Length: 185
Image 1 (cartoon, helix red, strand yellow):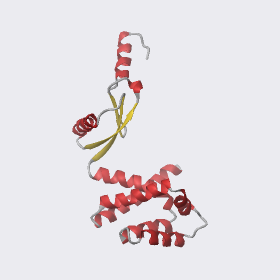
Image 2 (cartoon, one colour; image 1 turned 45 degrees about the vertical axis):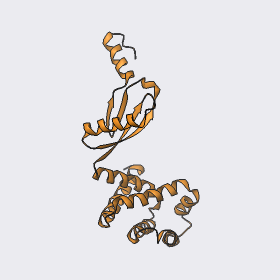
Image 3 (cartoon, one colour; image 1 turned 90 degrees about the horizontal axis):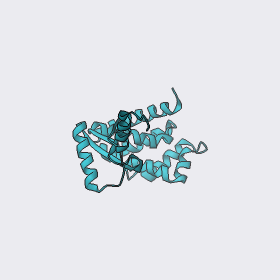
Image 4 (spheres, one colour; image 1 turned 120 degrees about the vertical axis):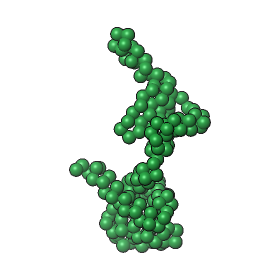
């Protein structure tokens, strides 16, 4: 198994364990927020990232710092989970665990994320309309992540997981050229 896939698998296992603990505490969303905040802090604060990644700093010292920094701010079980990550030398996986946790939580709540590509920026109302239509098609709540690509000319391209729905004008023009026999793209 490639290292990246193995890391994702390990991160998913930890995320599943944390989600189980969070549900027992009846605060899955809150724990997800705390984990995401920690992951963001690690991603944006080079000192924190270096501290957690450093093999020169003992795991006990890292656990003690986490305890002092977070002890009064997070549930005891959440802190113990983080300290166990340090003990198992998996603290560098916190951002990946946060991503997996978000994915698992969304899936359990029937939320799907879609990459939506448009030719131009749209008003919030149009984005909400796209989300509403996609939600009806999929049968789940769809959260659109909009990007702009003028080369699609018009229409919309939607990616949800492995599914791509291409309603772009560029694709329609390409199909028309093929039907007319020119074969040029």
